Amino acid sequence: MFRLKWYKSEETPPPPPSQRVLIIDMPDLVMRKILEEVDLVSIMKLRKVCRAFRNYIDDTKPDSKLNRLTIYVRSDTILVLFRYFLSKPMKEETPSELAEVSYENNKQGCDIRFGEGQLKHINGRKAFDVFCEDMQTVLGNQKTTISHFYIYNREDESEIEKPPLLNFFQKSLELFCCRRRSENTKTYPSQYANSIAMYNKVCGVILKILKSRKHPLQVSNLSISINGQDQLETLLENVESAKLKYLLIDNDIYPTVKSELNLDMLKNFGNLKDLLVFNVLITSSLESLSHIPIIKGTFKKITATEILARKEVGYIFLPL
Image (tube, rainbow, N blue to C red; front, side, top):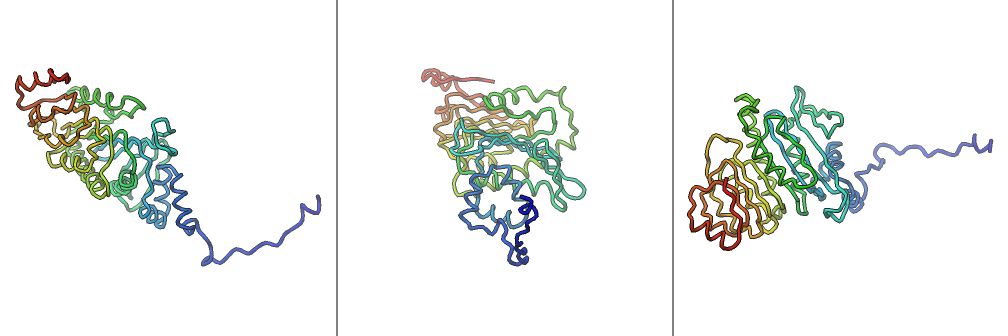
């Protein structure tokens, strides 16, 4: 035993730098298998390790295994909450995890925080640019159906609440119904104007990512703060019509301005069950939306005949 303790085997000298094998040098099939088993947060962190990893992930586009995605936009911060599956097959009973990522600028660059962990400082880069790259990984590479996708304009931190596991759509409805009270407004006009500009930039990026996908995004529950007819139409053109069941549209960007929306494009969404519209006048006829069982919103024009027709076929009509 004593001799074995002091026995020294021949050591192989380290290979020269030019011959060292890195993890990125593994066969392509092996790397793809590894990425298939890696969770979403690990992939996002891996992209920030080096240029080689970032380029490889962007080229291979591994499935993000995304389940729910919520984006809160403020004038100085973008907060992203997402729930992702930890393994396959990706079903409701499959283990999942909730993650939170915040993006904020600083004097040297930007700060990225994953959950309650330490800030990651990225020098020389803007938070918005890093957010755009991460969204391309999270949303652009999504191959399965997303349960919930929400994007809101939120300047007041007190209005931000994390999504629960269940009844997210109902909780969102409650949030929309009671959040806009004048006595609770704490933001300054300049802050709100900046948050609107940031929100429009974020929406533009989301729409660009959706248009770049080979297939429309599959999502069951969709909730969005909308800014105009074109923005809504572009969004819905890139959503799988057969998958969408719940749609919430709000105009909290300019709540004091009574805007109008034509929702005739929803004729193609035959499986839509609930339609909730806030701070917007619906110019479409109730008849054109007769395939939707539950509608909550303000119509610019509605006739008694249309209301009676819905009651005769057993639909639920919920006026504001």
